[in-house]
Image 1 (cartoon, protein in one colour):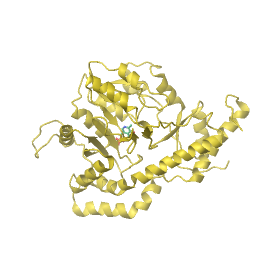
Image 2 (cartoon, rainbow, N blue to C red):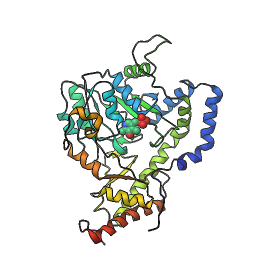
Image 3 (cartoon, rainbow, N blue to C red):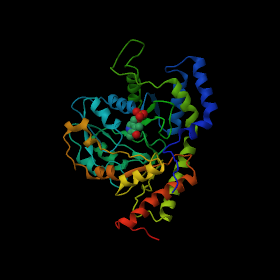
Length: 386
Ligand SMILES: *Cc1c(COP(=O)(O)O)cnc(C)c1O
């Protein structure tokens, strides 16, 4: 097979057609000289609250800071425990530790990659102050049992929805079900800014007020401080860019979902649905396919093969939290969370961005097929039908 180049993500394909509109939005901010807070932030917050169907939307500096701010607004502090998944981007656990609290880690459901609600229930102690599920790769965690366990113990739920803007659980938007929702506009997320930006959502007016106060050093009015917060503000420039892009999100989500469905057909037609496990979409949830993550036993071999052909791919994530060196003092042994460890060894994300063409998808699947054909000769572990 000739070397082809298919990028893992093509931001130019998304942002290029919006160049005139985004430059006009940036010019508007330059002309106003309102770089911090102001009308762009107010307008973005109103527009995103409406788009997401959530009462309060608070524009912040990043997805990481959205998680940190949610935990700060809930008063999480040293000695507290926060129950979360061991399999996510680092920011989820990092925010807990930065407040001096202890992340109590939980294994994943091996089918969805999301936190296992029953293991979660068994991890709640009298010191648990919050539950922090992640909607990994754009698929909602199983929120009903999570909310039931939380409500029974009177513990708030902070949804890390950084990868799941627009995803739903039983027709409700994620980020609107727990006490707080946290979103990221990192450029490679489904709705990406031109730099760092994030959003915190809540339906609780009192907590929204507290989070807004903490976003600007607990200050109200100027130079009178009620709480020790931080600088967690989103730039007006990022808000202006996001206001151009947000109305397009639904279309991009539709395109990602179509790509996912086309991959399913292509993998099946190529007889690859045996050696490769495709992501699942439970019927009660709308998956927004931030990532399309496949699994296979020889993941590293497949990765090398795709790298050689110039086909973009990424490992999310090679090391679960409990195996990260910075969390060694949490004391989790190798093998503590077998499903997450297995996912870390087997999962590989392939291109899924909205602008990916049918021909590109066919090339990706053909390349993956080539890997298993070559193997069939030397290794009979894989049976390829037809
Ligand atoms: C991206 C991400 C974050 C952090 O968002 P940033 O905007 O990069 O700070 C947090 N949690 C998860 C699950 C993420 O994927």
